Length: 85
Image (cartoon, rainbow, N blue to C red; front, side, top):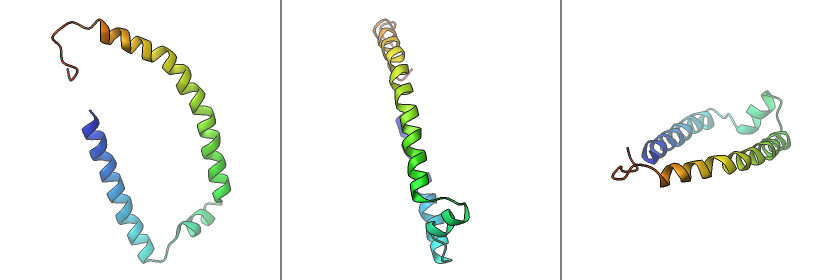
């Protein structure tokens, strides 16, 4: 399951590198793009902090239910089944 995820992340990273190189060739910078969209680094950082502040408590709360349920399902699965099934 992890292999396709890593492969997808590598593809996205390579595509981002190619597009970034093309944009840099034409003189387009991140500062220009952010200015066109009316963004500042402080605003983006604030959104990221607020997003993490919202998501982290919800992830922790959900994991209090999901992890024990997963553990019980793992303990009581039929014998002989591999984890890749």
